[in-house]
Amino acid sequence: DSSNADVANFTWTKFFKNMATFKGDLSSLTAPPFILSPVSLTEFSQYWSEHPDLLLATNNKGQQFEPKFDDVEYTDELNQFLFVVRWFISTLKSQYCSRNESMGSEKKPLNPFLGEVFVGKWEHEEPLGTTFCLSEQVSHHPPITAYSIFNDTNEVSLQGYNQAKLNFSSAMLSVKQFGHALLKVGKTNEYLITVPTLHIEGLMAAAPYVELESKTYIQGSAGHFAVIEYTGKGWMSGKKNSFKCKIFNCKQDYDNETKPLFVITGQWSGLSTMYTGDDEKKKKNPKTFYDAAREAKDVLSVKPIEEQNELESRRAWKDVAEAIKEGDFNKIHQTKTVLEESQRALRKKEEEAGHKWETRWFDLVPVDEDHNTGFVKLSSLAQLSMEDVPSGTIAGSKNEAKWLVNDKVAKHWRFNRQKWDEETEIKI
Ligand code: 0T9
Image (cartoon, rainbow, N blue to C red; front, side):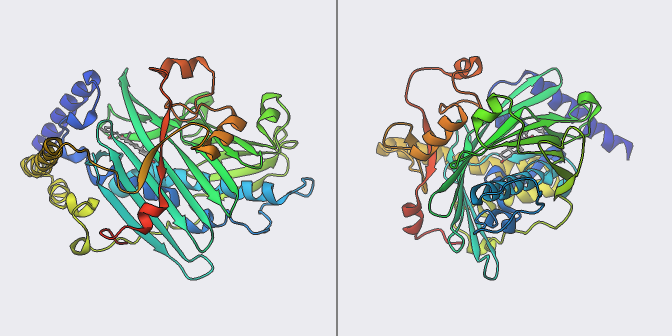
C-alpha cells in the first residue's frame, strides 16, 4: 500500500535528519517503530559465546590445533593461542550480523536501565558442561554494559565491559567502542582482547548494517600477539566483512616487521583461510581456518519471563517489546514512559536517602600496583593503552592523548565472582 510506504519513508527521512544533528545520547531520539529492536543491549553479551564449544576449546589440554602445518613448531601455548583466535573470529558474526539475520537489518536496541541484568546458560553434556552468562548495566549515563561468561568444568572465563560512543558525519554513523575483554584459561593463562571501531552503512536506504574498520588485538600472557585488520566492500575492491589476521610469537616481532607465524584472511561472516607466514604472499598451501556458515549457533537458555526478577531484561521490557513487535507507535511511547518514570522515581528516592545505586556483580577497579595486574601485564606486552580510551588505542600515541581528559587513574569494570556466588535474588 503506497500511502503506508510514504508514511514510513517520511518518518525515516525525518529520523535521519534528526540523527545528523543529534548530540550525545541516541536514546533520546524518537525513531520510527520499524527500526526499533525489541531487544536490550544487555542481551548483546551473549554474542561472545554462541559457539561455547569453540570458547571451551581454548582450554585445549595439549590438543593439537587443526589445520596443522608441517613446517611450524607448535608449543602448547601457541596451540592454545590459535584456539583463542578461532573462537574470537567466530564471535564476530554473532556480534555484528545477528540482527540482520533475525530482523532483516540492524535496529536500534533498547537502551538498558541502570541495574538491568540479563542472565542465561548454555547447557551441554560433559566434557563441555554448563557455561553461564551474566550481563549487567553498570552505568546508564553513559550506557555501559559489563559481562562475565564462565565455565567452571573447563576452567574458562571471559569478562569485559562495553560502551559505544556514536558520531554522525556525512550520512554515516561511526561507533567507537570503549572497553575490552579478558579471557582466562586454566589457572594461569590470560588473554587481552580489544574490540573494533565500526560504522553503520545503508542508513540512507533505511536498511542499516554494521561494517567493521581499524584493527583489534589479542595479547596472550605467554607472549603471543595477534593483530586483526578489518575492511569492507569497496576497500581496494574487497568483499564485505573482510579481515586479515597476523599471528606473531610476540609484539616485538610485529614491530620489527618479522614475518608472522601465520596469516589468516577471509570474511568473518563467512570463510577464512590460514597460511603460514612464509606461504601467504604466494597463496601457497591454503587451509580452511573457520567457516562461519558451518554450524548453527547455540541458543542461550533463559528462564521464562514469569520466573524472572523485575531487574531482568526481558521481564522489565516485556510491554515495550510487545508494542515494538506490534509496530504501535503510541503504545511504544506509553510503555517506555512507564519504565523511564519508575527509573526516575528510583533515582530520586536514592538521592533523598543519600545513597547511590550499587552495581551487583561488577566493581570499578583502578589501574594501580595492587589492582588489575593481569590487565597491566598484558597491555604492557602489547603496548596498548590502559586508560579509558577507545578499545585498542596504542599507549603513548597521539590518539591516546586526544581522549585523555584529566590525569586521574583510569578505572575498568571487573567481575567480582564472590558477589555472584553470594547472589540470592537472581537465579539462572
Ligand atoms: C556491544 C555491538 C555493540 C554493543 C552495539 C552501535 C549500536 C549499539 C552498540 C557495539 C556488542 O558486543 C557489539 C554491536 C552493534 C552495536 C550497535 C549497532 C547500532 O546501530 C547501535 C546504535 C546505538 C543504533 O542503534 C544506531 C541507530 C540505528 C538507526 C541504526 C540501526
